[in-house]
Length: 441
Image (cartoon, rainbow, N blue to C red; front, side, top):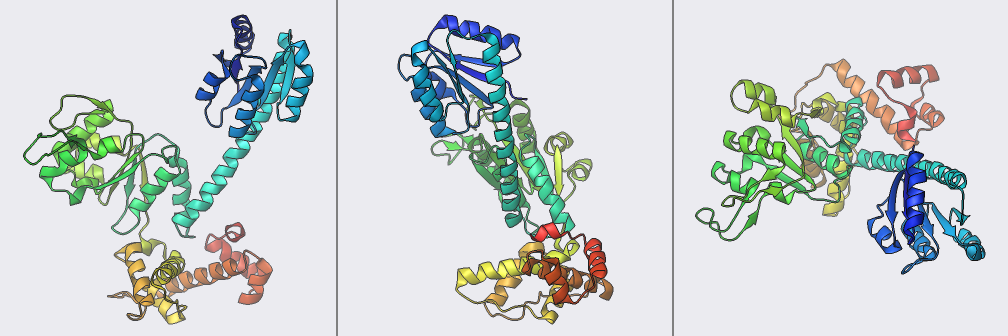
């Protein structure tokens, strides 16, 4: 339940009396003597109500109302008026004020008006939250493509973790999309407007690693000309993505652990501590705890990074996503290259579905682009019959169901007519493949 109230009144006695009444009733009260100070500190989506006098030095209560409504038309503003200001207050209500109270007013009248306004504000903020969740879900479905159950679970986990202030460890094979998932964790969280900084730990020579991570002052070492901001400091307020974290030198692991514990760092060549507020998302192929047991990674840092873990399924474990992904990559390449896309034949699709995809999604994107360029059939090199005939048939059946449902936007009657299936058989196949109609509406 919301309980925040901002009180704006130039009379100290009024502010004190209102604060006492509201505090005793369990409200969280902020006091301002001028409207300008209130506006300077008014946060977006303020979870409460603004209570303001009408006549004040500087901006009046009516001018405050107009500015508040410009920023957030649904934020309730209750006006406090003298007897002569009642006609003005009635006019203000037509302009969007929630209520007005004529001085002197009783505590009961004030509390009743505030509680009604807070109830309304709570409903509005909840509605906004639900709309934002729906928008994020749609955007995430367009970023992390796939209709497989594993991808549905992954998207749900990403949305849950994006808003939490915890470090995340992403496990996945090469080409499975670890950086894309890290980017989504950043973009759908409260740090989205700050920097997303990516660093591949395997791509930096060991002798340059500390300067890259922590930065340096001019003259800190031979060749250090001028001050340089390191990746940790540059990511302040945002997210630092450390790919292939298992490749980080042990000496730098100790220093990174200290930064995570103290939220401070020192540039090379400096004794000054710099505060940093950042979220670490790390990615790895091997199990970090196994690496720690083998002496190749610090166990304490592994636990620090692995507060929450996301496992990205390899493409061979979600073959039902291959047709959708191939089409997406082919369409993107065609738009970029000014070419057309030929639809897949049944034989071509069969070859794609039977391949093991050691390069995962990155390999599939390359095969799709080669087809658009006309460099041969959409067939991966070294294709193997990695699945039994029954498994390939299952994957192809799932693809056909999803394709028909997508074409007809979830219209079951139209799908049944196209595929010439009885309703009971269709329902059994939908259940077996983990499909629900709502996914295609």
